[in-house]
Image (cartoon, rainbow, N blue to C red):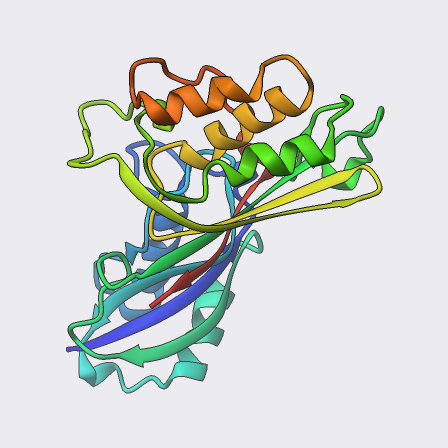
Length: 248
């Protein structure tokens, strides 16, 4: 068998997230359907992690295994996949990987970007691609709030509930958060060793709440100091979230 590593970009606005769900249109299902058209076989695609309904990717990573008899090189795989995928999903690169490579378990870090548009009227080409939040956000306060997250913390207060799936640990390390503003767009980039379900959206929601003056910055400090005692109730919309890069 050969293990194939792919890097994928997708517009998540028309998908029910990454993971296969019965009767739903998902990114994983679309990829597996494309591979079946090419090989005639049922092949499982393993992603670096799940993205939720409406969340986008600029650099999602996945792998799958095929028989060596396929004899397709990386360029042929890329072309064949893109021909058989909807235009909202594109394969950016393909390479053969060692058999011990795993898109999820081999990952060392991930980078997500979140974009907020504060303009009074959202231009059409940004629909479903940013969180349209026409509000006065203090950039300095936003940066100060985001810096509280940097480092190793128990993020239990910033973790959503995903059915019966309970993480063994809610401790994560955030290496850096970069906040940039350009006209009416605020961009926040989060790099860390891993993220809990809805974690980035909850971190953004809390930081924006503080930067609007609706909560005091001490509110975030308390949730980090007493993890899980109080849950953040302000989850930013999925529209503005992008999985940018997975590092190995």
